[in-house]
Length: 261
Image (cartoon, rainbow, N blue to C red):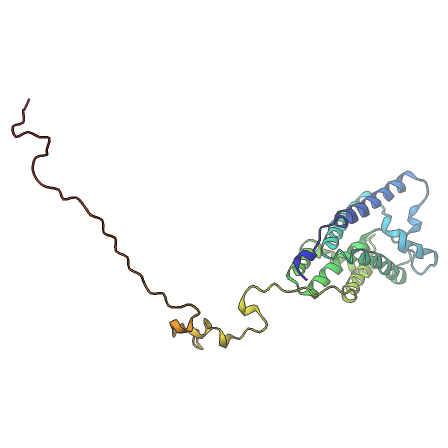
């Protein structure tokens, strides 16, 4: 698979943009409309609370909560859509389903709301999948996730910060890892640039390496017959340029008895 398989399509822009826009519209509806929308979150081990698996990612307790989820969601969804465009929707939908179900199973008896579980799904999937492919561009993407979002790992543990659903974070992280293992991606071809990077490379047949001894000293310079090119015979070219002979004596325009002032 070559780099041209990484496509910048309408989905690359629309999926993250529309997803974040829907979250802000839902938050606006929470403020403007009467009722407690938090009751539509995940309520663990309650049959009614199963509806929160679908609705909880769209519900947030405050503008700060929504803002903290919007930026990483926008960046990670854009990266997912660009580098894994054929599997982006599958990862997103399955991530919402399984992370929500895991939260319903192990969560504390309280309403769990917010898109942070989905953020953990995306970050975990992009990181682990890039490492698994061993393709240099996707490994670089994994390092990008670690650099900017690596600190999120602390929030999968209990009692790190009050008021957050570490269960949703943990389930999102594990779901992303599981999807990275189960969802197959094409074989990414390594870009081979040098002879010594090829699988069939034999140093003993390399004419350059034959110039070195076992200690790495340069010996035995190559003979002309061992090289691919024929020896170049020097060509000598002589250029003859005639010059004027200058005679000593008076110039033709001078007289024998010049006048003096």
